[in-house]
Amino acid sequence: MHYSNIPRIIGLEAESIPAMHIVAISTLTVLALLLALFLMVRKVVSGGSELPLDCQWIAELSVERYRPMMRLLDERDLEFLRSQPGFTPRMAAKLRAQRCQIFRGYLRGLEADFRRVCTAVKVLMLQSELDRPDLASVLVRHQAAFALGVALVNVRLILYRWGLGGVDVSGLVRTFDAMRLELRSLAPSAAGA
Image (cartoon, rainbow, N blue to C red; front, side, top):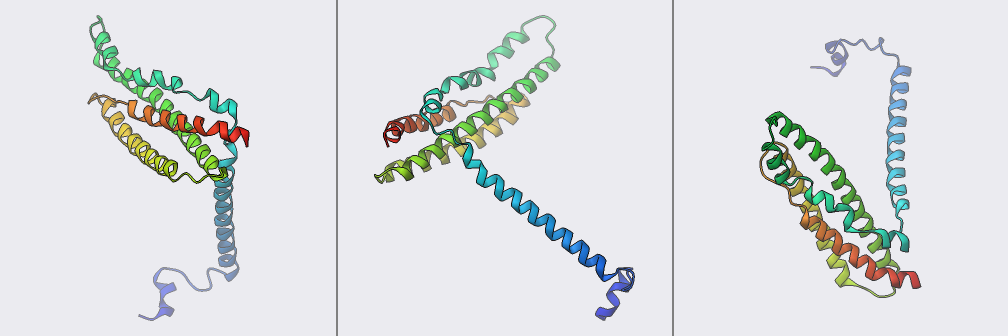
């Protein structure tokens, strides 16, 4: 097979696509890719500017906002409703779906707060005059534990949605609380600096 036959094989004549069209399409494609790259870099760079590293934010940060999340998927509520006249399996499925949706909102908030706390701890570690390898290892362990915990909770949430098992987020909340307390312990030294 000769390379000169390729345009005829795929149904294109060399003269049917002017060189200007090819150049224009290539230019537009490159420009679109550059624009997408610019927007992605801009999003990553501006992501850190949302860090509310001030004493008020640290003081207001609490695990109390996630207490409802810990009880939201409690099976006792469904058991009670099943005992009521007129309650159907379809109602149970709808309730599970609604609660899963609400739970996912709480989980997104917990993940965002955890990321902010970890970022704040990293910033404070970088600005500190003292090296803290112990804190760095604690940070890495907590981030790994949190990521694994979120993955497990998501799997359990899918199972819960279909009526199989429950979801326990107490480990995630404890990990978040541990990092929150680390941040609070570092914050007074940061406020004095």
